[in-house]
Amino acid sequence: MLKRYDFLVIGGGIAGLTYALKVAEHGSCAILFKKDPSSSSTLWAQGGIAAVHQPDDSFELHVQDTLDCGAGLCKPEVVELVVREGPERVRELIELGATFDKQSGGEFHLNREGGHSIRRIFHAGDATGHEIQRALLQAVERHPNIELVTNSSAIDLITTQRLGIGQTGTNKVLGAYVLHGGGEIEVVLADKVLVATGGAGKIYLYTSNPDVATGDGIAMCYRAGARVANMELFQFHPTCLYHPQAKSYLLSEAMRGEGAKLLRVNGEQFMHRYHPMKELAPRDVVARAIDHEMKVHGDEHVLLDISHRGAQFVKEHFPTIYQRCLSFGFDITTGPVPVVPAAHYLCGGVVSDDVGRTDIADLYVAGECACTGLHGANRLASNSLLEGVVFGHRAALHAIETKGRHAVDARPPAWDPGNAVDSDEQVVITQNWDEIRRTMWNYVGIVRTTKRLERALHRIELIQREIQEYYRRCIVTSDLLELRNLSLVAELVVRCAMQRKESRGLHYTLDFPGLLPEARDTELRRELQG
Image (cartoon, rainbow, N blue to C red; front, side, top):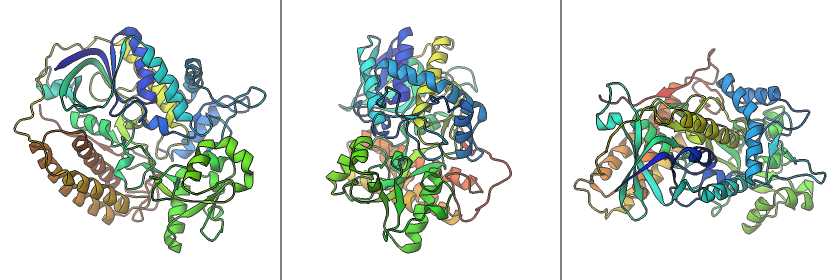
């Protein structure tokens, strides 16, 4: 089976949908959704999207807040362009039908979160991502040039280097091998490919991410020869609900922006000992503070308390969180709830330039799977949706402008399963998946050491050998693809962490607690033959 499009989008969150809407005016476009369109990380984003709007705010303030949070590793020119283009991109979302909360006078109600010096976060209650995804999906579903392909996973990118064609030393993307829900594997070709598959939180035992966040796009791009950078910079959200059935449900940072306090289990406040901004300190500071308090006192969690703001205020500002907590037996209007940090956002990813280009011709990345230089060593709250929409837009404009420029006439071979057979050992997948996630949590978590990283790498390499053997002899399934990608991304995180001999932003190691004089990216690239 073979299909051709002008544009192929792998991933259907804010970045992928924004890109698709714009390129579809200039050709056919397919969007691959690994599950259904409602399973993206965008849908789970609670807090909002940051953009300068109020008269007392400015581009300079937003830029400075981002740079301060990024701990010296942001690219100032990228921060500048994202911040300056942000308001226009937000206006486009509103024109598409996204509805953000307003005050009684008709002005937008803007939130403030940790690291922001002023209120600038557009939000839709505490379910902003859901509202943005709804508006974008409605628009793409109406577009005649866009095909939505659900329950379909890209296995690997098809490139000229993989096929052994084209000039030596050059590499152009041609499309991807795609596994559909029924088990059939199809060759999908496109002139331009955007990878916008989101993050990789599922490499950790505790995460706020949806089940689809297994780092697929990062793994695919790396295998194809693209550089990855700063993979060690994994942001742990400080406040996820601590409950065995909650799957680390995220309690938005906007709660602390509206006055929620962090307490030890005995009711004692502690953030004043760690940062002058207390609960509004950058996320890495708050997460490490909670982690330290738990370890020092032997507590399994800390508490988050917003009950002092009153029941009406809490229900109006955090209706989704209120109902969800209530379903687990916690009434946030009357008392505190137990919280723990959990893996939340990957600040590293596939290296891209200011229009989303990678090292591979006609291959773009956008959103959480990309490393643009915006976030540096620590993401400023609510800059992620902003990055997705800005780079989805910029990648689309460049793809339209250069469409057909590197055309290659190639017909890749069909997927060859070889002698692969159906697996009768599903336990191999579940066991390795669980072992990777526990290894990463225990050895590559909020606080690291060189010895822990070495132990993690040794275990992951052993697991990878078992996975590769399984991958060669068994029929490809979506679970196997996720495990293969998960193990590779875990390895990349560890290897980047071993490169960084300092504690900067989200990477904190007891062996190198200080900062090096110069902030540098950690980079990895797979060497390809030919």
